[in-house]
Length: 180
Image (cartoon, rainbow, N blue to C red; front, side):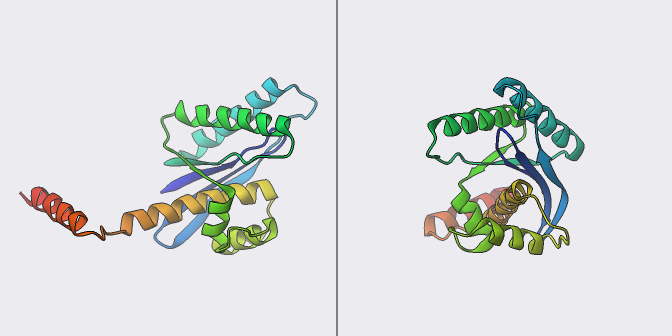
């Protein structure tokens, strides 16, 4: 499975594509889309969306993961982040790519094992999990972490077995229908 992780920002949007098979992860590409800060919001959003569209076209991800919005002290910053997230959601939806959303805490917990991990800890674990030798921009690191989180969740969901008696019965019923 190939996942495009996105770390939204109006001045810097991080992206990272990770391919996962079992417990192995491989970074396909990563980087930061940086529209000119002197532009108004709408042209910056367009530049971000065009950059993400190019990444999607070049890498053909099976899923897109966007970090959920968090609330900032500045109402304006929170609103602008919402605009960026909305534009990214539309870019993925227009291509029919399934979208996952995780909170920063969920991503940190999945990658580092601690929901209150620092950016440095996340970057260290991302580099370790992907066997990357070079330093990462924090926005790209966060995007790669989101993709890893989604791959780990997908793996757990695929290997999970129904724990309840009703779940086991349903699974047996479905298996018997497949055999017929």
